[in-house]
Image (cartoon, rainbow, N blue to C red; front, top):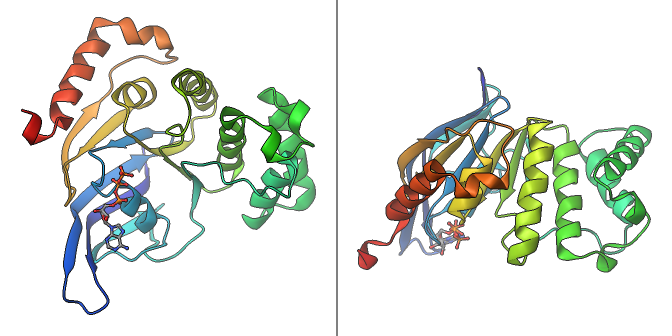
Length: 257
Ligand SMILES: Nc1ncnc2c1ncn2[C@@H]1O[C@H](COP(=O)(O)OP(=O)(O)OP(=O)(O)O)[C@@H](O)[C@H]1O
């Protein structure tokens, strides 16, 4: 399998304007995401996950290290990933369909193809009824479905999903996990996912990378052994419960031990 994303020895130190104070956030991070693989980063709050996404998305420069997508270094360069943020951030003045079309055309897809793709996929996921609605009439869960579709249909090979369900209530979150799981299992895009939820990571991922508190280092890689297609029934599986406990112990702050 070839790597879609390769992150090598990435370090990030933030300095204030006068360079009198520095904060080390990422410490020698190396990992890869293979073609069609679902990899999740999990770590304590403030461990640098969003910073890592900013570096991969080219919004920030690393202090040292390299990032390459399909073997080409993309450090400091934008437009190479499809990104789904914590909040759907849809344009309120555009219809749902126009929101999807806009992001696809920005990514280089022609207007007509973008419109066809948007219509087809809104239908496939049962959202055809809201194609001509504006985002404010949609629930949080529906907005996140649209946001996910926007990323899924973008032509970039790597999808980066930054805690996409964190703002949803528990029940909607579970529905969204099941929805994403079935959609992803039939489309197999390369995904780098960030979550605080151990269950979510175990349900969705092929591999989980556990980050330490800042400055973040990868302290453990867990291969998730469950066969696909998966479903929420996994939650009661003794192997699932065992792994969940193991991850919980790894993520427990030292002060709580
Ligand atoms: N531009 C910046 N200048 C200085 N420090 C920063 C900057 N951006 C982030 N940080 C610091 O880097 C650390 C990591 O932040 P980051 O948002 O990447 O963590 P996170 O793991 O995504 O957090 P959370 O899980 O709470 O969303 C924090 O201590 C934050 O204050």
